Image (cartoon, rainbow, N blue to C red):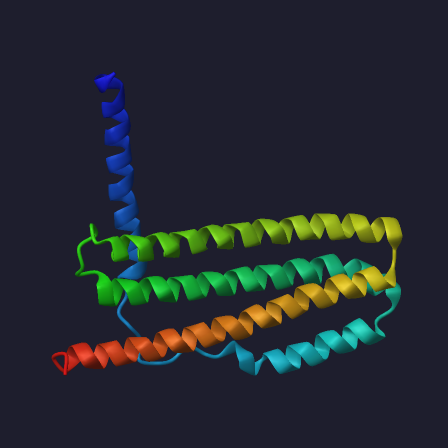
Length: 188
């Protein structure tokens, strides 16, 4: 029984080393002095364009475009989530990488970052599922109301996630700058 557990333990420790190398390569980037470009500047124009198209487009256009627009909105939200997760991971790496990995708080934070990556994968799968199901629904019903509802829900959800992600990004940047100055001033 002991011999069968040894290969698994070796495989698990090898996987852990590979994950640590990938983590270090992705997260070990120097902080940038330039703040991120806020996507919230483009959102009002995008909302005006999508509402105009949603309101005045012929029913055939809406049935054709809705699966694409909805899947694109979900993908945008997922990609932005990945950006926020990467910023959180880099923030963690810069300010907590000197702490012992055995520390329960560090393990809990690392686990939370990796769980968010799982949410990203789920969002991407949701976008693909939305495309297939909405295309089937609209092909069967051909309803303008259904397409407008699906359109509004997905684009509205994307806008909310982008605004929330932008707020989180600004918080991370502010905390990063604060902790960077604090560390640079010798903790004073």
